[in-house]
Image (cartoon, rainbow, N blue to C red; front, side, top):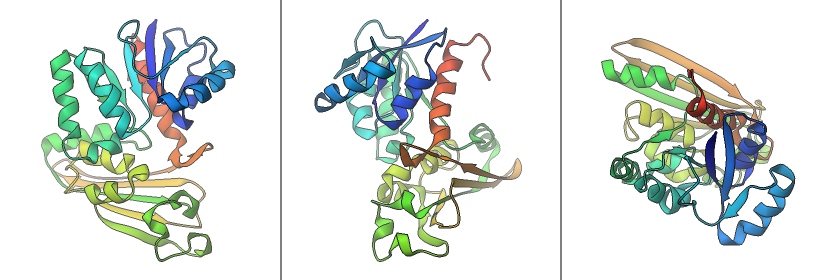
Length: 266
């Protein structure tokens, strides 16, 4: 039985716990949340997973794997110390790695602890193909993110436009993945994942679109290089509890956990 500490008990974390109920090889034994969120997490877990410990830091014993679903601050506060102690970690908030130096900090912490940090693919596919293509040489990578207007609320997309009044697609951003992550941090995970697997944050081109004609989150990756070329398009249904997040992000996290416990993994 692999004992898991989950950082975050929001939409993604709660969904992960729900999907892991009754899993023979995995058990969430602790949920890490800020002090002000302990009471709410305890109330939610009474129905969802009674007996799971709620704490403000990752336990230093009794945990085999740490899974982060809470963002940049959680990586700095909880993931880095866990790695230094030698506990392997899975990171879902890959967009946070667009912050200068954070990816390097994770790598150094993992080396220090003699362990590994895994970045999950999240809402996008073909990351294995893109990372393999990089070995042979990539010439260009472009990511296009197309979401319903409501998914862009609370972002710079609202500046100078009424998202509710859109009747046709509207390009809200074009630039590098690093710029996209800075302006749209809550929508940056896919762009950052594509960048880290391919040409990096500064050479990966990103286009973000608010489109009232779509109900799903549509992700498209186009890549060319010595291997040839590919174009991948995915239409992901948003997570019911958070329209900024694709439901596939939750499934990707669960897959990563199950692969850790499985005798045969793919």
